Length: 405
Image 1 (cartoon, rainbow, N blue to C red):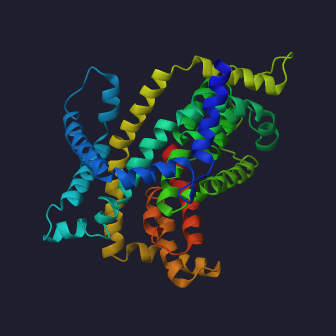
Image 2: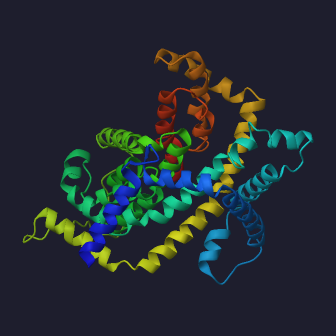
């Protein structure tokens, strides 16, 4: 049974996220088909859900600034720093303002609910609606790749190759796979824990954290869907993975004088050895089956639901705030056009038309504020090449490293 649990659920996970399937004459990954189905048949109900969630976030975020619950998960979700409280409250209010057309006819209201600003973010055709649906489906399905042995199997199997190519311990492959199929934050946490336990020295931990802990597959799927690449998502995400590995190869060979080979104070350097009586493949398979056998389905579902709630409360309102204000600046001021002007010449030199280059330039710099912003800036481009380039660039943006720091 435990063997079937590992193999069966892992195969379903790969099919769900990485294998294009043709339905209604459209070839997309399954998550994209589900998003389309919900958008077509359940959109009004889902908009109602987003409105309810906006009120929940608005009210409970304010309450939890002065109240502490006995339930730790609730505190983890709703308690936040002053900056995050501000962004959450503002994002929820902006979302409700656009959906209900509050303050329409006033100067401030018309600016915020303009179809080219807040209207791009919220409502039936809003980007946030796509994110709500994609994250719900993606995060609920994500444990198929993260919890049932795939990470342990691939991570252990590729370990010796990683040692030779990237000059880091083979166990780091598990951190990398956890980031690719889960979230970059997961990889950072695992890497930090392993560093403090003596599995990595300081230099190795730095290389792993900056080179492997990229954006997770669920977020990448949301960006790809918005940019119109759901039908070629494996290629889109594959490009991100390949570029990440190339950068990791280069980073691992840099001097990095500030990051020496010392281990965490008070720890003894550790290594993981393959049992002499097992081949690498058998050892990898044994670890994967053991992981799958230990996992409780009820616990996995509970964890996934909490992760969805975390995204709905702590991430999407912030995207609404940052996205709307950035679009207001882009629509009513020349700020992004001015600071990104040199990039227009760069993209023209690379062969893009002037009109396309003028869209790509501000999108390039917008990613330093948030990784999703470039998608907002470039989504209306008629050039698939420009949307692909900016989408990949956004998910490899230095802003992700700023968060890790």
